[in-house]
Image 1 (cartoon, rainbow, N blue to C red):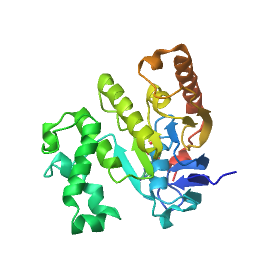
Image 2 (spheres, protein in one colour):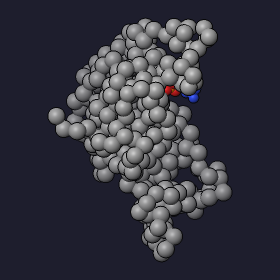
Image 3 (tube, rainbow, N blue to C red):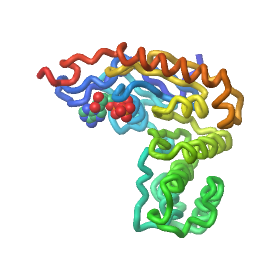
Image 4 (cartoon, rainbow, N blue to C red):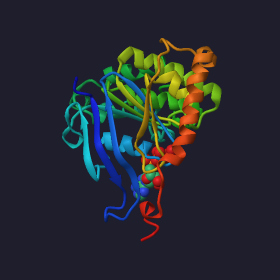
Length: 276
Ligand SMILES: Nc1ncnc2c1ncn2[C@@H]1O[C@H](COP(=O)(O)OP(=O)(O)OP(=O)(O)O)[C@@H](O)[C@H]1O
């Protein structure tokens, strides 16, 4: 079997440190190949964001292993892009400067940025903005853009340094449904063009089925992967396709699975730390 790009092996996460805190993940196993697009879905609080935190190295597992490109996450230098529900732009910077932030921080761009390539990087940011329909908005400040426009800019910022891994935590969750669907299309185009490995956390099952190649359904907390399904629809997918019977049937099956999953994790008082 090929070595996966992301691997979680028997991962347990207990928040709180003294062994009496919240058990968020129990014996979670997950393998993701490079270039794949995987959606994590499941009941609220089941540990989806916890998996993103593990893969980004923000937290360590209480036990088990988390590997990225064959190495422990802590020892890894894989470039990562991040986008969240709240696009959090720096208000004192222009949109272009916000998009360029990873180029100031992440090598090899960082040293080049300091030397001579600032103009070149501004062009790169403008090209990204044009791809997501924000041509000409580089000089604007964040407060001059709508929520949907800010989220487009946030996708540019997540991808400008060509990361091998893109972590998305409900990036379209706060948008109206029309804007959300527009952003799905943009996200799909960006993924097809550069093929980063993507791990998407979402509550929107149509979104998961539109964007992902695989959907992993988690149990209620303490979470683990309950079901791992391939999404067979051809690309590029369209919003119209999301109303086809096959697509609707997949979404319905997921919905049922999550309803069942709500009862399959089983949170006890001890798990929450409330019994302590
Ligand atoms: N820093 C923390 N300290 C203590 N408990 C935490 C911490 N972070 C998360 N938790 C708890 O761990 C569990 C899993 O949290 P997580 O955010 O991973 O779930 P989620 O599936 O992403 O939730 P949602 O779908 O509601 O966003 C939740 O019960 C949460 O309250």
